[in-house]
Structures are given as C-alpha cells and as structure tokens.
Amino acid sequence: MVENTYIFEKLIQLAALGARGNSEKVKIQALRLVRTLQAEEHPIAGRLKDAIFSDVGDNGSNIVRQVHGPGLTSPVPSDKESGLDILNVEDPVQLPMGFIGSNEVKGPIDAVLSERKKLHELIAAGITPTSRLLFTGPPGVGKTVCAKYIAKKLNRPLLTLDLATVVSSLLGKTGNNIKSAMRYAREMPCVLLIDEIDAIAKMRDDSSDVGETKRLVTVILQELDQWQGDNLLISATNHYHLLDPAIHRRFDQIIEFKRPTSESLKKVGLSLIKQNENVPREWVLFLSIAMEGTSYSDFQREVNNLRKSYFLYGESGAQKFVESLLNKDASSFNKETRKKIAVQLVRENRVSQRAASKITSIARGTLKNALEAS
Image (cartoon, rainbow, N blue to C red; front, side, top):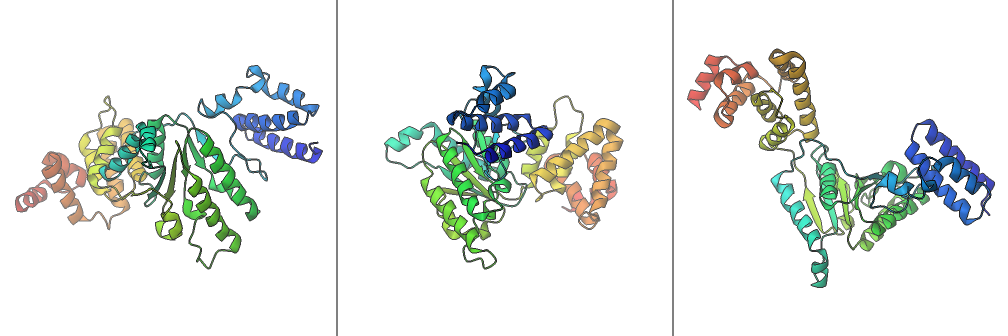
C-alpha cells in the first residue's frame, strides 16, 4: 500500500509547482501520482484524477501527448528527491533566427542526416550507423543550436539531460537518475542531448573529485555502450580536455565547433535582416568584421541591438550604436584597426568609401590613401 508520507510529499511538490505557475509540470507530476495510486487501488486516485484533469478531456489520458507532442507516449522520468523532471523536452523544436552552420560543421552533420534516411539499409548491410556524436568547442559557437537543427530535420523531439536536476544531493542517486534518463531516451523516438557532459564525465584521475563522483563516469560509460538503434545521442562540452579519455572512445564522431570567421558571421547577420527592414547591409558587414572570432550568440545580440537602434532612431541612432561599440573596447578598435576594417569593407564587401568612412570614423582622405597603398 502507498504510504501516506509518500502521498503528502507528492502533494507538496504539486503545490510548489502550482505556486510557480507551472501548470504543465503539475499535470505531468499529478499523472504520475494518479497512476501509482490507481495501481494500489487507493481511494484518492479517482478524486485526484477528476480534480486535475476535468478540463483536458478524457480525464487526462492524452495529457502526455498534449505536453510532449506526438513522439513521446509516457512522462519523462523525474528525480525522486525533488520531483522535478530529469529531462527537458522540446517538441516541436524551434530554431532561432539566423542559424547557419559553418561548412566545417555542416558537412559532417549532413552526412549523419543522410545516414538516418538509410538507417535500416545500413544495418542490413552490416554497417554500423552513427548514433553517438560529441560536440566540442567554446561557449556560444552553436553546439546546442546544432542539436536542435538535427532534431528538427529528423522530426524528433529533443530531450536534454538536465544536469542541474540529475545531480542529486545524495550522490548515490545521481547514477540512477542518469540511467533512468538514458533508458527512457533509448525507448522513445527522440534526439538526446547531454549538455556540458564534462560536469559528470571528468577524468577519473582528477584528484579533486570524490570516489562517488568518479563512479559516475563508469555509469556514463556503461550507458553509452548500451546506446544503439534509431535514436541519436549528442553530447556537448566546452572543455574537451577535461573529459575522461574513455569517454572520447565511446563516440562515433567528434565534431569541433570553432570560433566563427567574419564570413560566417556575415551570413548569419544578413539572414537576420528581414526583407522589409531598411538597415543598410554595410552596418552588418562592419559588425561581422569587427567581431570576428567572437561567439555567434554575442554577434547575434549586437546585430539585434543595431536593428533596434536603426528602427527607433534611424541612421543616426545606428551610427551612435556603432560608435559606442568602438568606444567600449577602444584598445581593440584603435585607429589602425578601424582603418583596416574600412579598407576591407571597400575592397572585399564593395561598400562605398563614404559609407566605410562614416561607419569606422576614418577620414575619407586617410581611407583613400590606405586604399591606394594596399
């Protein structure tokens, strides 16, 4: 028989979720409790079901599909200590504006997507398809967005292993959370993303880690070994060098995401400008050159700031925004750097000398001399 203490704890969790306004998670957690109570023929099961699901039709039998979309047929596992979901679900997957993968990344990703179209033919031919990918690279270079892109192309939900939830205050339970999450993801049509895998898969010779933490690496290795079939598993890390070497060997492909070039940023920036916007392309070209080597996320933020400035205050507002950007890091944007950018705008991007001079605050005569000397 279900203990009253268990029921009280679950009701308190439901109340906490309701107080935070998270109605979807209230319904998911309530459905779990109802099913547990029904299995024990507890008298409160029916009353709880009617109270929570009276407005969703069929007394909540389709609540999983409503919350998680058509791909998932049962609630995702939860941490028994906190009651929170271990996996975050995105279905359907939404891609941010301006997503354009670099050629170095797009090639391997397109190859993986091609494999998925002929998955069963590959298996029948005795060829093992790619099922485990490791994305490496600094923050903000598109690792998570690329996982979204893959899930969207495959028309699968994206499940993200929530490391903030999976690491229980009782370390012994963390391994069980990981197993539950990966077992669930193996059984459901999905793409699984383990973000910041270095948080739980550090080298086992790291003297700063306690023994229980080191055992989590063994759990991850065992779960990776069991991963196979139709689903893709993607792990992402900002710190490849921290991963245990045995983790590296479990992945079919390791794809490195590098800092974007100005050409990559230019493509992203121009894709963000809508057709009915009057923002001159030379302003975006300037940002792509000036911010080369930054992250995509930082660049997209500044392009959005430029668009807002132009929308609210016109060209004078955009000019002030660019000037503030130059002044914010004056040491990086000294006169010599700005002169080189102005030359590049004219030479490579066919921006008029007048516009290049205005954007970079380089005198027309100085720019003309630099062009003649180059």
